[in-house]
Length: 339
Image (cartoon, rainbow, N blue to C red):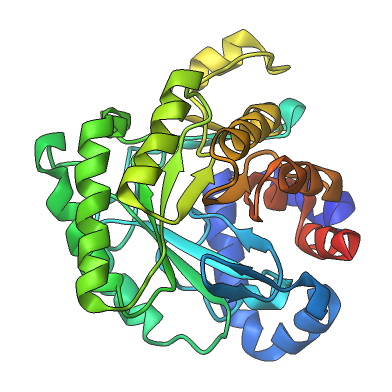
């Protein structure tokens, strides 16, 4: 029904406007339709439960960061069968992000290009929403720096968000790999990351909360850079990685070069990065002898795509672009297939 009737109508309109429309629809209808949606989409079975970095997930399929930036839907997305939700990316201060238009569909490639630029209402507003949490779902907090913050002063931004969100999320994701924030990917420098991640681990130890910390990495890293990531995790003792973020690449697309040039900069997500993401997962799992947790994301449109990432070494998976193209039944299909 979604792909036959709803998606064709949605795709007639600007993708960001439709995203906001869908948000409002979910929030308005959840009090009345939440139970119906949950009975249709949720797959409940002990066999789906997973314990990863000390947390118990009721199933291994989550919604990736970027969908619910401000934690407005944390009590509603459970109705669609998700096992966990990652909010953000959250920054210390509110910011509007990059100028519009900044979200583009590539239907021929089943992909999206976005350059949203960490648009969010700021960590204080996000905490207000998290205080309203009623769901038992695992909530991850994806944190970043404000665009106006120079890279040399980025660390305090991450620390501020970490401290503010600490009592309201179950795990943290450090986002230094998004290609949509000016110069952010330069923070993938190993020395900076070692200092930042070590600081966050020390803060966690002081709070005695044992909140897992993960690093979100790009799909465009080469083997040497991935080796550095493995070494970095061993040094800092963080719990794992999210592989992967969106890509700066534009290889092997069916969309015309003219249209791609007209769209301009942004992170590519969806089917075109599926193999890239899976290979990063496989390499990290093998190189590290599976010594840390991996959440696999990138190009998951079918149960087979999810299984491919799990077989490659992922412990959990997240969907985003596939959820937009395939609809909410995707989560149900993946969980049914895993059973």
